[in-house]
Image (tube, rainbow, N blue to C red; front, side, top):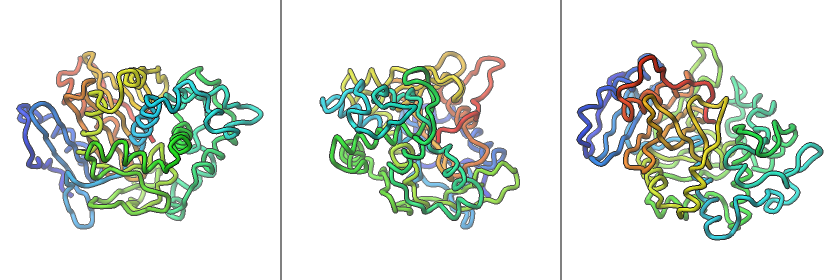
Amino acid sequence: MNTTTNDIAAPAPASAADRAAARLVLDRAVAGGGVPGILTEIADEGGTWVATAGVADTTTGRERLPHDRFRIGSTTKTFTATVVLQLVAEGRLDLDDPVEALLPDLVRGADRDARGITVRQLLNHTSGLFDYVHDPVIVGRSMGEPFLRHRFDVYRPEELVGLALAHPPHFAPGERFGYSNTNYFLAGMIIERVTGAPLADAFAERIARPLGLTATYLPRAGESVIEGPHGRHYSKLMLPEPDATVHDVTELDPSWGWAAGGAVSTTGDLLRFFTALLAGRLLPPAQQAQMFTTVTTEQWIPDTAYGLGVASVSLPGGVTVWGMGGAINGSWTYTFGSRDGARMVSVNANGDWNFPIAAFTELLQAEFAPEPAPGSAPGSAASPMA
């Protein structure tokens, strides 16, 4: 396997010669972290720098390419939140609307009542709702060999929300932060209820087409093959053993992730999307301010805060970057940058073991905080953005 960083021809920023630290992070992620391949694209006022290490396909040895598409996991949440906020700007719903008013009789029961949960609490994960990915049915189908039998299962949003609602809430609405994919399934259902169209159409019409994101889309239920050019996605099926068998899981049905984690994109498209979002080109000022109003995340990923579908990461030396990360079977992605979007980093690893959040955080440090404070540690992999 190739573990040498490959600089891809692209308009080079003035700082490209100083990116030896970034190249070292990529090499370590493959040689030491064991991921099959890693791809990063960095954009600033000087242009774009693209580099890879490892491979896109362990069978053929093909290198990763900038136009390769991949599954982006929870970065999907930023797209969902953006559409919700656009609908708020259009006066078609309000962040303080109760879920009950938008999805009548759906989130109710003896120990929960949607009248106490608002749209805002869905988007900033303060609803208290149980995360369906932790339901025993989903856990039993997603880990180890059972995943290979269930990877093409098709789920309806109502089905997964129903699994979540079979469990009591973790806390009262608004009490604190608790990451739950269930929140974004409900947000996606609200979008479809308000617009009268599939969520995939909202992504395409409101974000992808206006921004020219030609490789970005939300697969529909039953669409298990990634459209267009792509490398392979590799998984150890969430098994903890270091010698667990690696499986190619590129083809799978992503309906289990849908509005919370089902989308496909490229590093270039993600840079374009987050640059536009951070620069205020997708939302009016009022909704932009709401999106970037954060809550404390406590036991999530260290040194982070969460807004409405976006997160901030505090790096050594007081530098804060904004964006989102995501994980899904065989793929991990991070896209973060300066608050104005003038400098952005997008990175993807095509293996889902060893949780590469630490490597991604080191890459952010290399770009945004090249002289870490003494004694500082790289980011922790305490909790994946799944």
